[in-house]
Structure formats: C-alpha cells, structure tokens
Length: 146
Image (cartoon, rainbow, N blue to C red; front, top):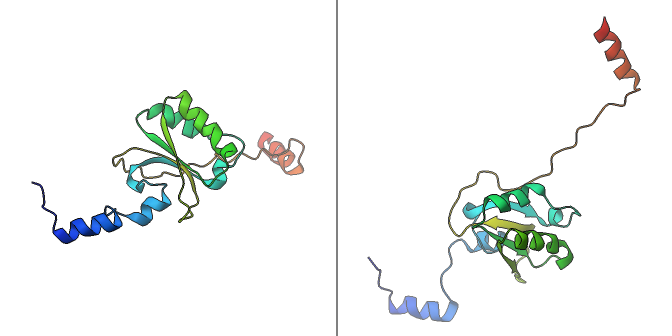
C-alpha cells in the first residue's frame, strides 16, 4: 500500500531534498549504513604501504558488493585498492564530503543489510620470537632436558 504524501511533505522535499535515514551514520560510513558493511579500513590503514590481504580476499568472496573510498585521502593511497577492485570486477566509488570528516578510509558494502558483527580489519600481530642465545631461553632449554 502506498502512503500519500501531504502537500507539506512534497514542499519540504522540494526545498530540502529527500529525507534521509540515519544521516550521521551515512556520513561516517562514506554514504552507506553500518549494517550493510562487510569490511572497513580506517584512513591510517589505507595509508599503509601494503594492501590488506583480508580485504582483497573479501573482494573475491563478495563480487556483488561495492567499494566506497574516502576522497579526502590522496589518490596515491587509494590507487592500490582501486586497482584491486578493477582486477576483481568490483564497482567502486570515491566519496567526497567536504562538510563532514570521518576516520573511515574505505568500506566494502552491499546495498542491503548483511549485519556483519566485526567490520574493522586489522593486521595480525607478529609473533615475537625469543632470541636463540638469550640466557632465559637457555635456562628453559636446560630445565626441559632435566
């Protein structure tokens, strides 16, 4: 059933544009909603030299998703992800919103809800290997042999 708009609603829409649901959330997540996001990287992560292999893998697994890139970032940082999106035939958009600042660098999202619990990717922490000749390691090895 279609709801009829009042004259006032039509006038308001004509003056201010269509009403938008969750405008703050949309500004934060580059024009999309949190519930639609498969994965996200912060600006600092997009600026890193290497791409996130987890994101590239998610691009392969979600060919119908779209990549939204923050246009506030220098194109040199975005280029590696644009290249990956092209390679995997993924649609992408560079989002520019001069009226709002967000720490989000990019999002991989659908145009419908997927309700991914954890959207922010992070690099795995590198395991610290004990030095082979450390005195503590030598002591443990000696104790193990006993």
